[in-house]
Image 1 (tube, protein in one colour):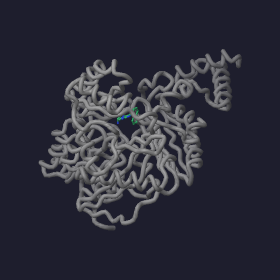
Image 2: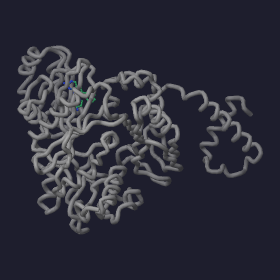
Image 3: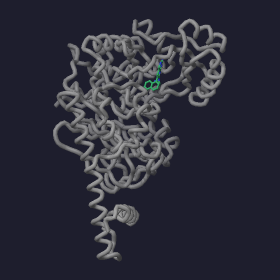
Image 4: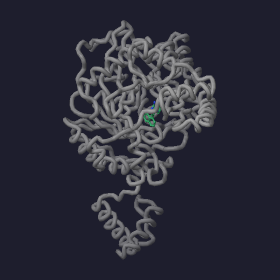
Length: 504
Ligand code: MV4
């Protein structure tokens, strides 16, 4: 085995991504240091790491977001580098700089590259210079509504007002006609100021019903930059992706080559190093437009790993340690991968966060299955952090086979103690439009009412009815006996179901 890139690193994150990085460390012979808050003292990532350092109380603003504490923990543990995962401190320019100033390696791009694409107008300017197509619009902040009006006339309505410091849809307003412009500008500014402390707003032409397609890039310190193809991320709700796949039904090999070259050019222009993602909108005519660059490992990175055979977290670590990328020819995706984000949300009740203790966890297995999770039986799911409890990822020879495999895997997945998005994902996979790949960024929200009220297949109801009858029978024979693990509340619900079904 070749020498490890580092001997010890600290992982400034929690949950599934912390575990993902810990696993990569173990494979590469690197010692891992976890950090944890009060709420995570018994979390899986803490147990699986070689060492763990407590960094504060449950709220992330007092623990996972306190850069100084985390850097101190790294120094105290003798770590050489910090992997930020995604979220938390991953895309904070000041953190990347502080890590470097502390004499440690930030496993990610240089602070300067984070800054270069952090401003959306600066990123657009860079992309244009690199020859990467961007959405028609401005590259400077708007002065006032009059200027916005002139620009809107030039590009034609509808337009989108976007926060210069933005990303993820905050501070974004669609304007269909001139009369709405002034008030939309006010509210976009207010929201941008609140979210980013900067009320600068610019204009883009609104692209109707596009897909969200992103390109994974990987660059080393010696100027080599490659793309690893696209991910289709259109299935999302309120800017939260739910299902991602690689490749995309809308991307031909020829389009992949062009989008890949455009992404590589934009990333090079930003002085980018390490793993990054260029987000594009792809319209129904096959035109693509650069939106923004994400300077982190993304939640959905596994679908790219499965179709390319390249371990992105391994390469993040090797690049950060100064290794050269060995890839020469273009990487061609093999087969099809799909990821479902399993969240602790009650999809039948407006996706309300669900809390509780995991009672039982059965993870699917068999051909082509990967589970990137951060929970186990006994894990407490609270309200302090993101509702993502795990990612179910499948790989198969074709899209059709991958859809069938994901359905089979979701069927096997059992999580008790909390509500999860598992059943909702099953309904999406059964949808004929999804099965045809006829999706765009509004598809899920358009279909949400039917998908959340869809009945489970008949066999599930039959099994439930039989179970209700058995529980009712057991209750009648021994009403005083303990309920045997299903819990008193659950038994009451089943008994009621049995009664209403006339199964007594
Ligand atoms: C757009 C757009 C349509 N036209 N820009 C949303 C978040 C941010 N990343 C950019 N976003 C959009 N920008 C133009 N000119 C539509 C969206 C958008 C979107 C983009 C990707 C994934 C999901 C989305 C959901 C709603 C709107």
